[in-house]
Image: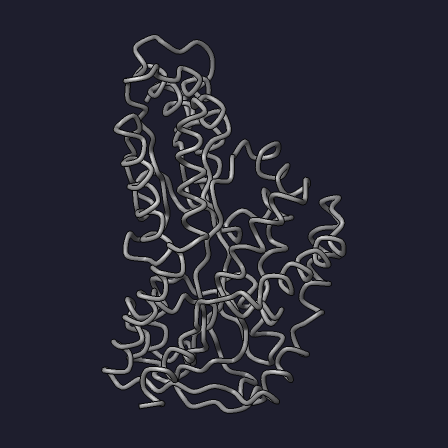
Length: 377
C-alpha cells in the first residue's frame, strides 16, 4: 500500500488494475464493462455472518441458483464471516464497487438506512416471518422513499428481503409473567435491547460471539433478539434452557443487495435470472428452508433437555401494550422525523400490509412446531 493511501483507496486502485486497463474512472465504473454474451461476469458476495446461519443458507441457495440459471455466464465468489470486509463496512463496500453483493442488517447502518429501520419492531402483530418478507418487499415496491433510500442514497439495488426468523426468550429460569423480567439482564440486538427495557428488564448489547460465555459467567440472565437457529448452533440452550414464546413476532429484517452500477450494467436476460430467483424465495424457498432449519434446531434442543413454554394470551397482551405503539412512535419522532421522513405514514402503511399478509403466513414459530411435534403425540 502506497504512502498516504488509505485502505479503501488502495482496494479501489487494485480492483481497477485487475481489469487490465479496461476501466477509466473510479472503481464503481468497473462494473460498467459488462461482459458480452458468452463471457463470465464474476461477482463477490461479501457477508458478515457465518455460512451456517439461516439467512446465509438461504443466500447460498439463491446465489447458487442464479449461477446455475445463468448458464455459466455468472460466477459468484462467497466471502463469509467478515472475511473480506468487517462488520459495518459491507454497505459502503457495495456502494463503492469493492464487492458486488451483500446481506445488510439495518442495526449496523443507522445513519445510512434510517427509514428501513422502521421495518424492525416487535409486538406489531407480524407473527409469521414469511409475512415480514412480503411486508418489506411491498413497502419497497410501493413506497418511493424506501426505494430511494437504497438506490439513490446508498447506490444499491435490493434483490430481496430476508430475516432472522424468530427470537423466543431464552432464560436461565422459567418465566410465566412479563413482570418477572424486572431487573433481569437480557441480551438484545438493536431494537431488541430496547424492547427488553420496555418490558422491565435490562437490555444488554452483548456481541453474539460472547453471549454463551456471558450466560455461563452470570453476566446475563437470558437472551432475546437472537435468531432461534443461530442460538441452537451456539448451544445457548445449555446455559438458558427455558425457551419461552412471548409473542414478539418475526425477528430482524435484512436486505440482500447488489451495487446499483452492477445491476444497471447487466443485460436484461441476466436481470431476469436474479428477479426470477428472488420470486422463488418468496413463493416457496424461504418457508421450505426455514421450516426445515427451525425443526432441526428444535429437535436438538429438546434432545438436550430444553423446555418450551408460551406466555398466556393475557401476558402477551400485557407485553404488547408495554412495547407498542410507543416503540414505533419513538422511531417516527426520533429517527424518521430528523431524517425528513414521515414516520407516521410509513408505520401506518406497514400496519396495513401486516393486516394484508398475516392471514397468509405459513412459517410456524418454534413453540408451534414443538406443540405439533411433541405435545400432541
